[in-house]
Length: 170
Image (tube, rainbow, N blue to C red; front, top):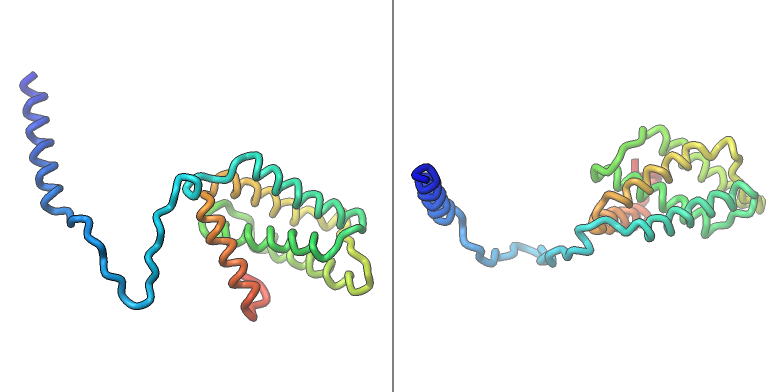
């Protein structure tokens, strides 16, 4: 019993010291053009639901299946390219890892599909699908574990990249 009282007294003393040493919650003055960031809500701090991830995954795999069947188009190609770049930026944020060479290989395959479209041929050969599938598998894992705000930030980076003059994000 005496030990508990001594421990409680020590804890109360620590709490008083902590309160004295911690700054009060004051509004910080913003310098320059720094916008105040809204606090993140519960939905932004959690990952996407499994149902949402399955829906996205189905969309990407159907896009790839259409290309394998020779029935691809520009919209489907854009979905696969967006998934590729979004996966890269989420990996850059610390969610999963695939070697850079896999991204380069997948980008080359999607690039070749885009170039063949000028001849009205929208196809990706079965033998060329491995790196794209590897990227899509990683992206599925990323969406299952990355918080929604991290995915939104990665999407913003994809948009900034698309507006830039850069050839590739890596």
